[in-house]
Image (tube, rainbow, N blue to C red; front, side, top):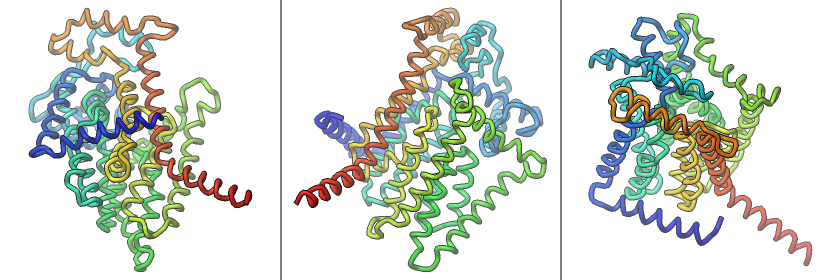
Amino acid sequence: MNTGFADAWKRGMSAFFNRIASVSRPLLIIVLVGIIVRLIVGFFATYTFDIYHWGVIVSNINSGHGLYELDGYYYTPPWGYILGTISTVGEFFGFDNIGERVTDALMTEQYGWHFTATLTTMPFIILMKIPLLLCDLAVAYVIRWIVIERCNDIKKGNIAFALWFLCPLTIVAGGVSVMFDTFTVLMLLLCIVFMMQDRGFLAGTMFSLAVLMKFFPAFLVFVLIAYILKKHKDNGLATRKLVETMTGAAVMFLIVMLPQIINGELSEAFSFLTSRASSGMGAGLGVIERYGSVLAYVIFAVVSVLLAFRMYKCDSGHDLNDTLMFVLLLNVTILFLYPSTPQYMLLILPFLIYHAVVRDWNITLAGSVLVIGAVIFALASNFTLLLSLSEFTGIVDMASLMSTIDLFQSDVLGLSPMAWIFYVGGALQYVGTLLVLLHVCKPFLKKKNTETESRDTQHAN
């Protein structure tokens, strides 16, 4: 990457966020801007497919059925419990109409993408997006706490807060895609905070919730175990603290899963594991398509073990909390070398932000490529994002909207415009992931090259 451009980028981004962090009451301004942007974006644009499924689940709950009694819910229970809470709030405010089958939008279902003509109403859309907004706010606060704890610098903490809460990807993931990965991020970060505070039981409970919300944090368990063992290596408390943390995780697992255990629905609660493994890459690759996910995740588990071992053996002179955040960034980035959907990238962002603010601001260039690609990827559904707005407010004419949507399915150089957006966004996201990994690994590569050159010089002499 061009050094001059990278330096200019560093100066520009640093000056921008330093200006935000140095104004009077910076957090208030950041929060207000982030909320206003989310409310505007969230009012106009909604990815209909996923929120349609949330509407189905809420309808099932409203009809007196559990999460797994009717088809529609394919996750472990925590997100279902949140949907149940949203259902209760909706009933309290009289939001009875969750969605409707819209005949004018039926044409979208013939395109072969994940489109649906069953559109959720505006009150339900807003009701779904508010908890995600509040969770984003909580994540920003926790990231800020971790940075301040490390640097004792409120200004840097405010910059970290802004980098999360004003990040286009966090805004789009919750405000447009209506995906709940931000809850996974919050639980994982709380787990890390409690580990830093040496509160093992609470750390275990948060880790269990993070894994049950989305499975990816499970791959970080080896690094977290290595952190506990290394932190208490010299005081003889390593085994005790590890057992304490594992007990917290087990207790929370039992609390969350108890209804499913009693109802004999444990296999249904974990059906996403088998469906994910069997879905593969979706590219018509035969055996690779079927078992590619399993092979990839086995490899990532092995890599996670190696990273944990490396962390345990590293120089004790390093700040252990700082090392933990660095290794977790490396671990999560490697995990998402397997092509992932945009909302999954939220798991990288806290560690990327920490690295930028605490260690090396230059990583924001690679991170920006990742974020821009993920946002383009997430918005590939183009004007279908306005379907609910058109149907339930009339702000956009449905006939004109459908014509524009159809235009995005026409042929341009062998692909539709939507496909071009989809693939370009996905490619940029992947390139950004590789650039982040390259940036993180660059010191090791330089060190190895220096050692090689030194040996070659010694041989020459």
